[in-house]
Image 1: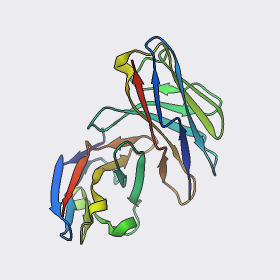
Image 2 (image 1 turned 90 degrees about the vertical axis):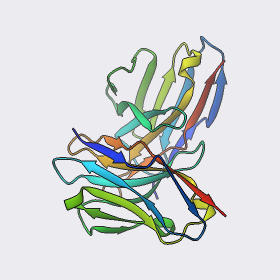
Image 3 (image 1 turned 30 degrees about the vertical axis):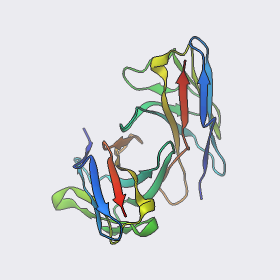
Length: 113
Length: 116
């Protein structure tokens, strides 16, 4: 069965410093992978997606993620955090053939001034 | 871009009453929509897959008689929480697979249900 593991439940950074949110997946195949962001009491917004094209994926708001098959990882990064980046981030995989999204447990990003 | 509208954004209801939540794809047709439930500070839990013109497929442990799903058109799916109880209080989110550009699941803004 496919699974997604987000290694950190909370990540704290200072404004202007780099962001790294870690995600590992478990799958027999290279899945489609996504990063979503959720602000309090809001739905999920797609940051970026990997669908077996370029391994380095650029998304919105300066975020990017690199698909590393050898490490089964899809970590999310941003060079410089903004206060508005504080939110919950979900790494998500699309299970091959079933159209179902498999969610990680989420990482709360805290950004301090 | 693809937009999914979810209504209402929040609702308070009395125990024993029913509540309907609507999920609409505004600028695309969605043959399949998904309903999720999210508990505080937790991830999303898939409740059911809603298919236009056919019965919804429920995940294991989800009561189909409590959570009625209707997908009557290509742009509208509804979730009705029947005989709601306080333990049904939660954040409910729908999503649809927007067809443009391949895989791209678009989510509604969510509905905060509080049963008192």
